Length: 280
Image 1 (tube, rainbow, N blue to C red):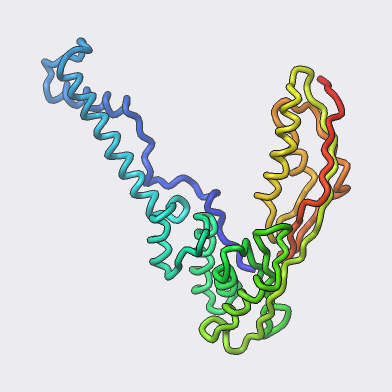
Image 2 (image 1 turned 135 degrees about the vertical axis):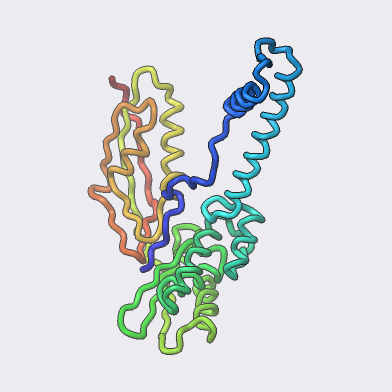
């Protein structure tokens, strides 16, 4: 399956400036002294100093605006209406209720789909475009001429209902989408329920509220991280539970890492995270 570039891992664009009002003001003072050697900046109340401060502030605003314009034209940073205009260039429209993150993901698959006409990214883009409740789709080819699309829902455990699968079929089976020689099958992603059991120890001075917050944050973090092909590892569980103020974490379940194939996704089942005591 085609893998989209993780935009968050790209290096910072060199076109974006790191701005400092103080540095700009200092440069202006040096420039003025070069042009007007008899001027000194000794008096803070000197009207020339005030004028330079105004100019430096205005230049900082203008250069920050240039940064914002550059960001609005980059897929990794464009948001809202700016992202809508960027998407339109690639023939993509925002779905009802679609987030910026989801729209960026579809744009990537749209472009990748052009590069290998009829490939995995092509079908993935159209599956994602069928309904905003679709979180992801895994495309595989079990045999020549056969295309299998596994759909992950944003709702509940991630298992799509019949209506959601039908909406995907209605799109990917269209004559202008399906490659003539392909037989396309749309199925639900395989959901792997996982029981998580862990024991935590806090430092003596750590408030018990930290334990409550850590447990709540764990479920949220898993919901945000999970997806098709994402492995749930014991080390990931430890990392999320070992928050500030936590002395020790012991994971009892799962007994081993939970690997997921490209068409599989973990779903949090029973969660049992207990506070065992305090230690140093």
